[in-house]
Image (cartoon, rainbow, N blue to C red):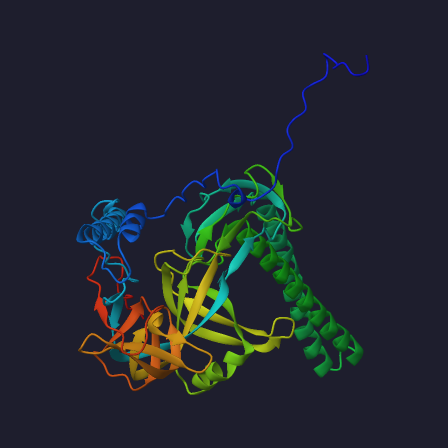
Length: 443
């Protein structure tokens, strides 16, 4: 039974040989695929030294030509796929002139102006108060109206003071009669003393009595004048010219001299002053011009510095420097004819201290600075630019006074200087093209 085959066992696989196919002459190796089949064909068919057939060379050239056409078509598609492009006229266009904005050089006068922050301060601001006690019977002004010095403002009941005046006048008349009688007695005593009819002492006593009565009469006269003055105080008038403020008390109230608020406040507006400050470093030039008798013009501008409010003159300079700020106070006076300046208004004050005559004026935008120097770009007649060093004298607004090899009439680049090099070709932009010359500021 051991020799019988097992029906469930698998047949044995024949042993695999790892030998080379060359060891078996009955198995022929398959041919190798050729990279260039056509080339292999004519190489197998030709002998050594025999040139390739003409149709093979033509086929190879045709392949290279097709490849070149494909590459050229790809390049053209990449170039023209976005359609026609607009011509580039920007500042960074390669090879073309750079567009710049220019401004002409001028020759003229440059004002030397010192600027400071100031506050409008009235020359007079008076709180109208009563000088006597009494009932306010009448108010003759309207809030906000303009009044002149001496105009009637209010009335206090004068009747108590009229009665007091009459009483004082009666007392004065009585004492004047007593004085006259004592003077007559003194004349009689002098006659009697001359006749040795009375003692000398009686005469001296009468003389002293006359002096006493004269003093009483003088006191009575002063009392009469006081009551007359009180009657004058019952009629309140404007002490200064100016604008009346809001009424502080209404008619019918009892007013007293101790009232702190008073009846009304009058503020003088014409003329008016502006008190402003300047750094102490600017004080020498102001003092030098002031001591020379020059009248320094002052101009007041609004908070933004854009609107001119009024023009006046420097009035006075404070006698000390504020050590906490390093500034000195100055006061300028303005006519304020159109009421453009209002008390306590914040303004920008500009003081004209000198004028530079016949200097070269350029736009402030033309000034360029580097670590080595200050320079400008000059546009030459051949539309190329040249760098020239300058020194700045003074800048006021959009104008700058300079020194250097710059002549009036030359044009300087004020816009588009970021890519300029000496000798660069430029194209001056037309007005309205987005690059314009800076305007000249008004003095």
